[in-house]
Length: 112
Image (tube, rainbow, N blue to C red; front, side, top):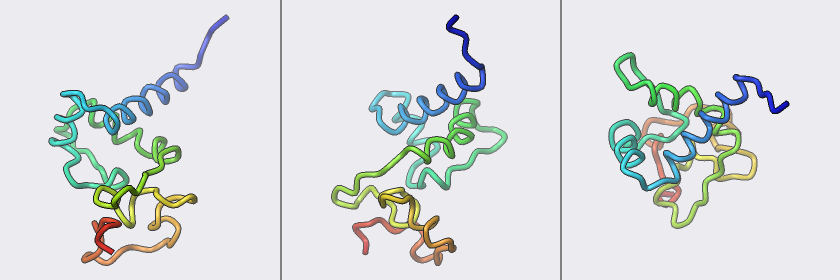
């Protein structure tokens, strides 16, 4: 019959929206990136009461996206050492199961 559960459609839409945010060069993606993301790893993104509904939806969807997202290291300048999922089994912070020291919190792979 072509019927789908609303929860499945909502999950798919959330994942696609976050995917477009990180892969698109559209005006919307650039604006969202500059306003909310700046130099923060995706796993550390948060929202506040005054943020837009779209941003809140993106933050709520990030955990589902992180399950399927892998980062290419490239030159290491855009890959967070601890937070990005650049290893085959996930992010270094999750594999180590520890908190990072404040000095190395936002290290890039190219910094090591």
